[in-house]
Amino acid sequence: MLMMGLMWYLLGMVTTGAIWGYVYLQRRYNLNWKANLGLFFAFAFAWICIGWSWGSFAEGEPQSGAMGLLNFGLPALILALFTWRKFIQPESK
Image (tube, rainbow, N blue to C red):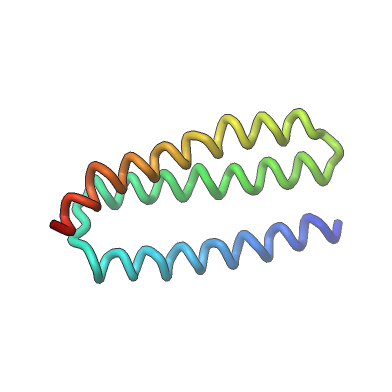
């Protein structure tokens, strides 16, 4: 039970950090709707990845946790990288 409480606390901290990061990006770059949508879905996949994997490992199901990392973490990284390279970085030139 303690591990799940810690997970929710850390997810709250990650959400706060993501909001601060988004505000920083919004001030520094001109974000269009594609960049906003890509960043939102990358954050959503990462949030689900952390929750799914942490919960699975805490419950003693390491295979489910590994699949959560693979099925949600990898798309989050790919989507964040794709959004940065295609929609955010060209605006800095």
